[in-house]
Length: 399
Image: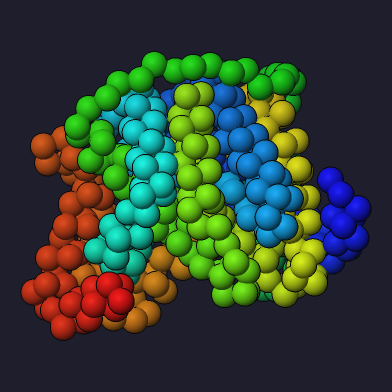
């Protein structure tokens, strides 16, 4: 680190880094715990997964941000994590790990040869987001059901979040309020004991891997789309909109390599954080030339989360199920809202609606789950009902 790096340091970037860290923890960690429990992972498997994705992402973000002096928030795909949760019971964990490894290798190849951008041009974002919204809608319905079932814990947690939204202050984040007040409700009314929490460093495990065509189609391809199409494209796009000269190929390849490393220890795909980029690279992060410090600070703090993975995963067996389900539902509300806005806020709405309807219906054909067929259905629906808009979209992407 040179003296010029220290000259770029500023307190505005520090606060932006802290804000992003709060978002990472309150927005992503409860969801990760929920999906790990949903997939039936052992404590060691969950600990290894949490450690590798948080640690590898933090290291890459720090190195890239310092080297290029750009806020490049490498994290892991939340939509991809949510999607994996929807596959519970349809694939074994070994099949999911194998599919994640194939996705990581594919992202590296696509990044090196610049093929990813051309593939994404044929997958209209409204239809992709319709598929995504239909896939995660179940998290919200489960949250509502949990709130009705357990008013004293889940209901109070949901009410606390809504109060935070009503206050509408950056000093009172709704998810933070939900976790704090909901946690108090768990202590007062839930059947749990902190004595069951094992305080330990993360345990690492290399899981078994199974490879199949059905898992590649149903898991790897959607993971590539969610990591590159929703994460990299939008995250890097925001950086470019801030007049940063982004090394797109390098960042894409690094995210792919991270994805491969993650898969080896049971994790899933890395990406450029869309929300993280908005927080860390926007005007509120201070002078343009020093915003990379915000990314460095946020990433450094997430290493603490990685080192506490062993302790965090033991919470899965301690916290009431209704509490974790409610936090997970609240954590994806903004993602669901964003998905609906993108899917239905412009053109190709009928295709997006078809994709949503198919993705929200759990089924499989030839061992391939409904999320993949949702993309096919969405494009087919647009070809039938909104051909001009679809062809115009493709022509625009080709230019």
